[in-house]
Length: 149
Image (tube, rainbow, N blue to C red; front, side):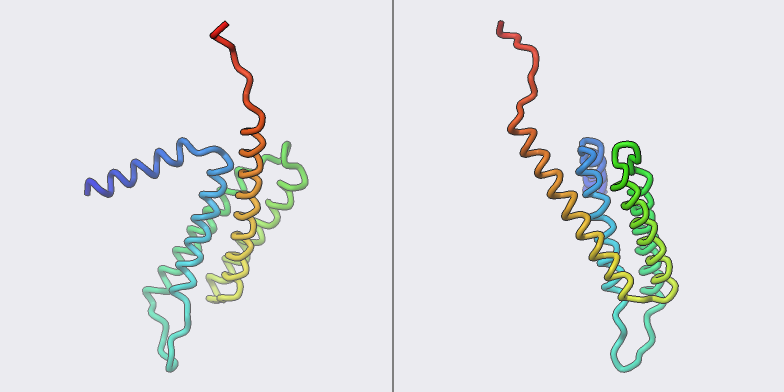
């Protein structure tokens, strides 16, 4: 019980202290994790056995969680600053949610894999942008008040 509370507190602190870019990466990480879990549950059983209904329910919940994460990414877009990039991401996120809805109904692995791979590519792009900005910020020290005189 104490371990669970400590882990929960750590996660909460990690989210509260993360930069905006790192929050976006955390969202991508969670979406990818949920889809990976979903794909683990989905494989067809050998010898024509029926799929486990409990796994189908778990898979549906994982897809819905992923859609919730994607919706959070959608509402976090800044259309003023992002302009065309934000509009394109919004359209892409909307398509992701539609594909996930269809895959949840049809249990279509191909659609899940496509969305998962595209999310991973976007995550990699965000990671590169954050790393580049951090390197630029390190090269440009912030000027402050010189209290030494």
